[in-house]
Image 1 (cartoon, one colour):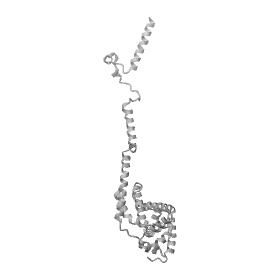
Image 2 (tube, chains in turn blue, brown):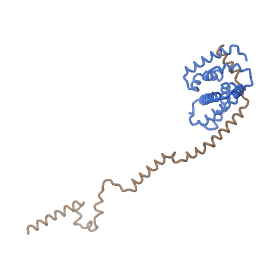
Image 3 (cartoon, rainbow over the protein chains, first blue to last red):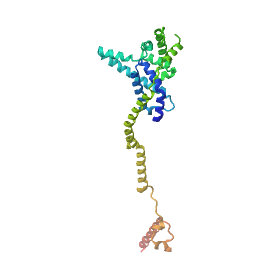
Image 4 (cartoon, each protein chain N blue to C red):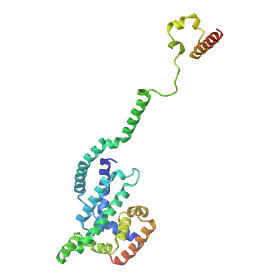
Length: 164
Length: 124
């Protein structure tokens, strides 16, 4: 794949990728875009490992998912070492979505585990198939179905009266 | 809540980004940095003698083959030179010696002559 082809693929995929990451980070655009950039650059550097003919989008989302996991781990470690004042600042930044109508949705999504959240967002928001999600998350198809089932149950309970 | 409801909720949620070009420009700038950083490494490896080792091996093997086959004298079976070409000219033109076609015949003739001479001396 040439640089020009990669750039075109990135242009086509960036919207969906950023959307997925934005929902994963509860509306924090800066963080979502940083991880999206990181994922695309890692994909660019690993272009030699991409096999022509395979699904570029699935491959890219797989890299992005791994970046997301790394970011969560680092964020968890960094929050634990903050004092109270710094913790307040971090929490306020995390709610930077200017559209408060989606706060309930964000809270509902936030109640899911990382795996459940990823599966739910990829399935319901990005319309990915279960097989694609299985490749992206490197888990079995049965595992994806379980994650979706648990995620669906949790969201149904949380969003009973949801009306944006 | 039905599955379709969740689909609708998440599709309604889908945030719009108005800064696609800004995002892509930032990405392309970083790609340029990567290309500048890695191009030197790529040039070195392309011209590195270590990447061309198959060609080196083939060249060395060909050089050895040339030395063995061309420069060095073959040590295969000895081919006896042509009998006639090794004899002095008078020997070839002399009618008395034209009866011989090999060194063995000459040696046999000399040995026979020697035996006859010894017998003649013994009778004296």
